[in-house]
Length: 191
Length: 231
Image (cartoon, rainbow over all chains, first blue to last red; front, side):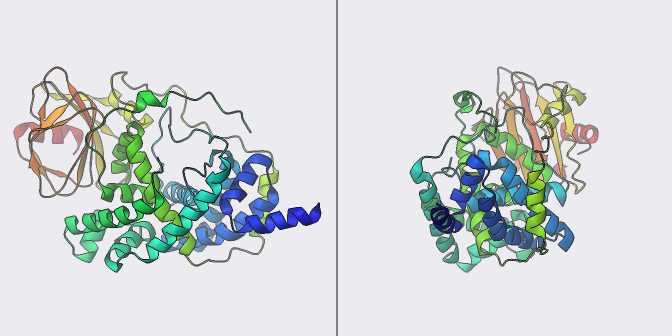
């Protein structure tokens, strides 16, 4: 028995979507530990890059992974990969904490409904989709990659990017459009 | 783990929209780089538009991919133990999502965030057929959001922009250069545009407007609105 679960833990270690599902369905602490080891240091880097002081970045990384534990039942691998879901949590925490804003709230939020039980192949599909997307990101033309990076890692809206790069607004907009179009074909419809 | 609530009727929210978010706005919103004023308007469109919600999800996948690529920064050695200790405690009671007793939005608008519904109570008539109501976004960066109501058949204040302006129809419709904008439709105007939309006949039009900069208003009505809305 012990041997089997060890093997399972090993296979799941590089499949974060399965780990989140394990947290959601049976409060699996080992799965949580693996998620923490992988994502917390990345979330900390993300917070640091966006200007959080080290202590705040550490605290937000903690908070992000605790949110993963608490909200695991809302994770739907058919709609988002694990890293995408965790990115969105980290982004919202940063907006709350650093910019003292909250995402707008509605009385009824269509995106806040608990996820249905994922179909067996959804997790494998999500993992594959994330890998393809990462490859495609590496192949983006440099001028498109540049505006994407400034947007996600420098907290710059497209109008600010245009000002900083001394580019017409339309040029920045079209680079973002081209970048998304290229990636969209790969990740498919996530609605 | 709470039982899943009965599925809600999402179909009723799937209205047919003609004017959607640009990819630039999708990326601004998904990356978290969009300011509060515009985020309110974009979130209101997204609430009504499943197609744009899907596009935001796609852009968030870019964020997920970047998160995987980023170099790791080690946490404190006891970070995992601290996290595990915190999840051992009884689940912290979730804060209520919205305070009870807040203002309810008018039934004939598309769904708006709580703070927008509250702003409607602060409406001020500024000219015959026109009221404005500033939405408190606490952004402090010169950006602002406001509700604007214009009576049927009237012309909206004529203006150009020193920045980007988003206008989302909550009720009614307007025509801008021959193009119709109805409930849920979003109009994005930037520096180059000079316009003066006309409200469609039949009913009043209520819009949620965000500017990341002050408008350059050209006519008397615009100046009156500007004076009263603090825009």
